[in-house]
Amino acid sequence: MTDKPHHRWRENIEALTMAVVVALLFKYFVLEISKIPSGSMQPTLMGNSETETFDRTLVDKLSFHFRDPQRFEIVVFKHPLERSRIMVKRLVGMPGEELKIERGDLWTRAGSDDPWRILRRPPAVQREMWRALVNAAGRPAWSVVRAGADWH
Image (cartoon, rainbow, N blue to C red; front, side, top):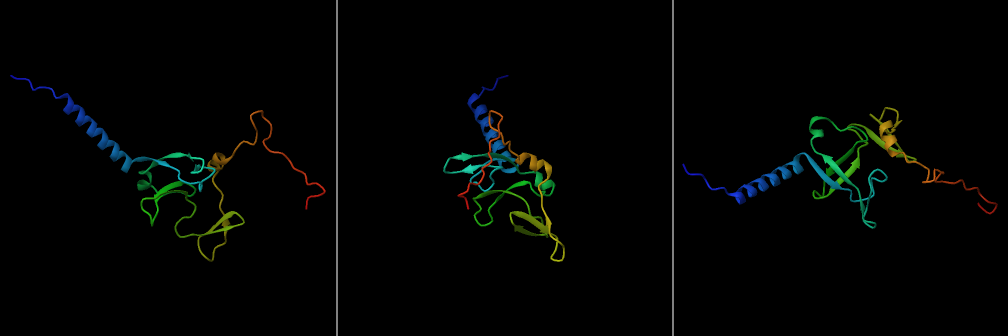
């Protein structure tokens, strides 16, 4: 019996090729890292080209194949007109409802005959948005300014 000669280079190239194929499949079908390009999601997600501050997100590409998206979730999608552009937005409108913004509040109704109701973020989302208003010394990071006699 003769032994086959070991081809270490071939084994390494095959292993590297399989690793690249698995990584690409994983990236295109399961998870992807995305950079936040603009400040439209601030203060939740930061993106600023002037200061070169960009948050990164890990995007789950599978969950919406098994369930519908929920209101106030952050969704990632391709721009409908510029397919190479990735959009990162918070979902507020749901199918079949009307939305309006009035005095900074978001309102919704199911149909034109229904009354408007204000939309509030769920408590878990609100907790994530709250920021401490104290500095490192434990003092308030804000102060009260009283109007002087020359203020109008």
